[in-house]
Image 1 (cartoon, helix red, strand yellow):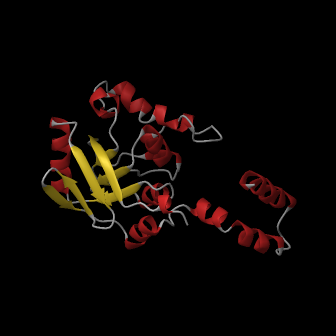
Image 2 (spheres, rainbow, N blue to C red; image 1 turned 135 degrees about the vertical axis):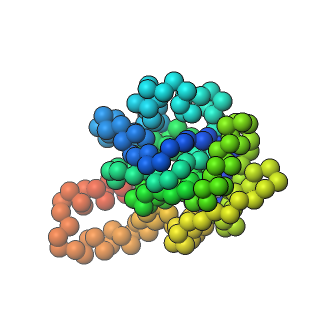
Length: 211
């Protein structure tokens, strides 16, 4: 496992997004899910909300380079589309902190190394006010220490223990884990009678990309 897969410190400026129960269809509308890859999804984050709200944070040039998203309750609810965290990541978001997240959204976010922390409603409110008043406020988030540092203050945050270990150990990327042990995976697959010709061709192509 390579060291660059391990995630601990996440740094950058914040972007506040107020509202409870912001679902995945609002994060990335369904009409943008037809592409084979996730390329370009970042351009359409909150597309419909931004059209309806000219002052939407994701349209505000003050937050153009933000990498820390601050949200309220039950963010990422609704359908289980993995495109939602993918779109946020491609826009530039590296970490999220909120009152709570949909379990499926949080799991999908983990699978691409997008850390989602939870904090108390009072702390979230203070973070949002900080970023609304001073958008260039710099934030440091620590997976190992479970805190968010803003200026001289440290805010306690949380995430499931399994998620914390996955980020710190670098085992959040299931695809990377498979390719890292590719020969072992291929050997097991070759010994399974039900592995189809399609699957064998899939393994052959992966092997070509690795050579």
